[in-house]
Structures are given as C-alpha cells and as structure tokens.
Image (tube, rainbow over the protein chains, first blue to last red):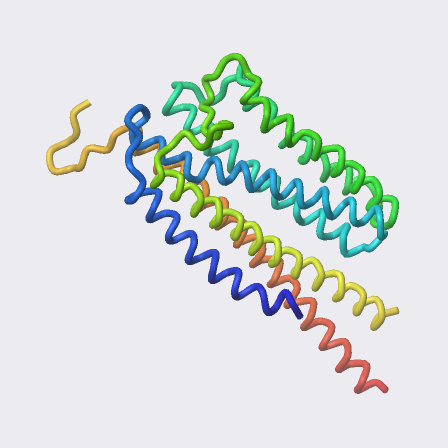
Amino acid sequence: VSIHLKLPVLAAACTGLFGLAIGLALFYAPEDADQGLSQRIFYFHVPLALTAYACFGWGAWKALKYLRTRDERADLESYVAIHQGVIFGALTLLTGSIWARVSWGVWWSWGEDELVLFLVLFLFYCAYFMLRFSVDAGPARANMSAVYALFGVVLIPVSFLAIRLSKQFIHPVVFKLNGPQMTGSQFFTFCVCLAAMLTLFATLYAIELAGKRLDRSLRELKELLTG
Amino acid sequence: VASEPGRPHVTQSEKYTAAAYLVVFLGVLVYVVIIGSKLQRLQREVEQLVALVKEKRTDG
C-alpha cells in the first residue's frame, strides 16, 4: 500500500526537480572560465556517479538486512538497488567518456585511477547478475547474492578516494576538505541536480520493486490456481 | 570550419554537452520502455488468470 501512495509523489517530485535541475544547469550556473560549456556535463555526471554509489550502498545495506533476518523481501530490494546502480553506473561511464573526449581529447584514459576503479566497481556489480542468475532461486542464491553485494561495497570508498590519492590529477577534484571548489551558484545547481538524481533513483527503485513484487504474487497465484 | 550561411554555428563543446545530456535522457527513456513492456506482460498474465478463474467457475 505504501508504494502506491509514495510513487505518484516521488514521480511528481522527480519531474519537478529534473525540470529545475536542467534549467539551472543550462541557464543559471555561470560558464566555467577554463572548460566553457562542456563543464555543464559535471552537473549530471557527478550526481550520476554519486547516485550509483548510493544504489550500491543501499543494495549492500539490504543484503546485510537479508543475512540478519533471512527476509526474502530484503533480497529482492538488494537486487533491485544493485540493478539501478548498474544503470546509473553505465550512464556515469558514458557521460564521463563524452566529457573526457571534449576536455582531454580522448574517450578513455587507462592511466587514471578514478576512471579505472569506477570501471572495476561497475564490472564487479555486472558480474553480480551472472552469479545471481547462474543459481536457482532460493535461499542459496539469496545468500550468495547478499555476500557478493557486501563485498562490492568495499570498493565504493576505494573508488571515491582514488581520485584524491592519484598522482596524475587529470581528473578534477571538486570536493576537498576545505569545501567545494566552485561558486555558490554552481554548488546550488549541483545540489539540485544531485537531489533530482537521487529522486529519480527512488522513483525507479519503487517502480521496479512494485513490478517485481507483482510478478512474484502473480506466479504464486498461477501456481495456486493451476496446481 | 566556417558554418553555412543562414545556419547557426554549433561548436564541438556544444555538440558534446548536448550528447551527454541526451545520453541521460535516452537511458531513462529506454528504462521506461523496458518497464512498460514488462507491465504489458503482467497485464496479459492477469487477463489469463482471470480467464482461468472464470473457466473454473463455469466448470464447477
């Protein structure tokens, strides 16, 4: 019942925030003196990456919940969160690659720790699906998926810190210990874009979860009627 | 390269920025299409179950 009540509110908030985010990113935020217009990719690229981290973190939290309670709902929630994380991760890699092409002149740089570690994180979670669907549905599959999701979450701080530990510094460092390296209007735009992206995740998560639960209920009903 | 007369000049930076925004939009759109097709499948299954229940009622 809660999903039916929340979903329209989430969808409306997501639409409103995205409209505002696009408007602010394209027309309100000042143009970067160094990179020019292409810097505006930042307003979607970084929130996409942070949302992917949030998805994987949420998936790991639900995996931990499953291991503690053995509740099947937590397993499904963990799976859906990781699925969302892979989608946001793919969009991060695509937008990052486009930004790299316009800023550095290359689509990809293997020498950049941040890029490679994010790719490792993305591929690690892609492999989650191979593992999950290679085992028949049941407690064994849920256990293996939960342990794998928990291992993967260790890569998130490594990926986040890599940019700060890297010696090459081609990839820009925006958030430092002394605060964000941008103007107030740029930071405000970034915060709205991040809120929009997180709301998009919440909306898509609720939609996919509702669909999966409906699918499961229908299968049970079919078995009851035909069995 | 000079743009043709009467046509607005679009820089490389503008093209790539538009492409990045378009990628996000298309990504969400593809997801909505996939979810839409899944919903259609679920709708068909519900219709099949309704038909099955009706059939059982008439038989019983």
